[in-house]
Length: 303
Image 1 (cartoon, rainbow, N blue to C red):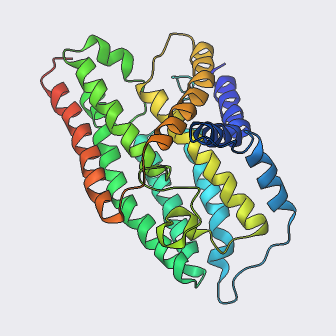
Image 2 (cartoon, rainbow, N blue to C red; image 1 turned 90 degrees about the vertical axis):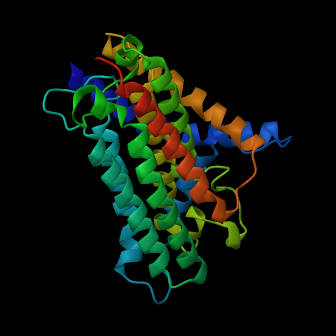
């Protein structure tokens, strides 16, 4: 039964990820006084690009052509590693360190694609993506460090039910949640870290790495982008969100939580402006520090 629930959750995230992305874009536009795109727009964009002919920059290699597929494959592996219903089938891999490695692999290949495009802005985006990634990884380890404190290994488990019973658990959960929200904005390339809507090359980060992509390569990159958007939110809710004893009910919660989070992200982006690039290390250091505070508050608990 758990295997069926896991596959149902994976299929639901795969199908709805462009819709979740589109919901954020629409909410942000409406709050900024614009009509904005339809929530279904990303489905149309991916389908249109998939039907187009694909070309590659003159001096690019097989790396540029392979990178979107590797990126999408890494994200699919991440999605299958998350116990979306709060419980994993017997023998199912669900290790947070594996998830961190796969997310880093996705960033690495997209950075390679930017460098291999032989374009100035592609290299700029690759450099910025790699630099931001080196700050995201320790911050994410700090945010989820309470898992090591709770049960001595790196398996992905719902933390909220355990933290509620622990002394200082609510405080530790609050710090971990705040840290994860900051990390999520950085990992997904949202404001105030990056602006996915910008067309100004000097301020691009992720978009600069796919500036030369077109046709099916661009469609795969956009599909990976929307899938990552849902995956990161699902990871946060799986670990830090409310859970019940029923896996089906937990999956139903997730169906509501993802759209709700996308609306909140749209509101956040409508209220903030992009930070200067050299301010991002400070932002990521604060995210890591907040996560470590949660670990410290939990350190004195007798679990």
